[in-house]
Image 1 (cartoon, rainbow, N blue to C red):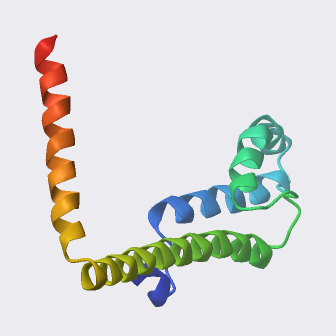
Image 2 (cartoon, rainbow, N blue to C red):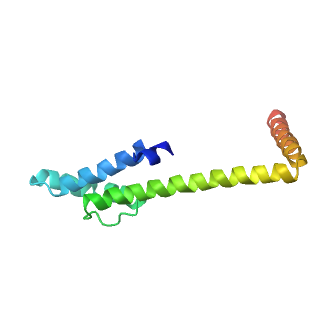
Amino acid sequence: MLLFYCGALPTVHNVDQRRILFYKKLKGHSSALLRVLAKICHPEILSIANKYNIHCLDMSVGQVRGGVWEVFADSVMQSYYSFVYCVVFSIFTVLHRPTCVFDFICCFCACSNYKQTEVNKD
């Protein structure tokens, strides 16, 4: 989340973005050998680009960066909203039914003991 607010991409997204941009440079290079290598790598780079909703590799550099950033921002927001939902639900549950926390702990302990006895039987 800190990376999001600092405007930086995580390493995984940054590496993917650099691979796509490097491929774009290879594809337009004056050397025929590099263009052949780019054609060989095309399916792999296209599968990476599809993760970021980039379906055409002829997009501008800004559009590629925007697509990678958009996917990263969406994943941050989804994890943030999930976290907030869990916290709010937990607080609400504890305030309205304080015994449910005890019930949850007992149920968790019973399940973990049950799994241990199953493993020990084998």
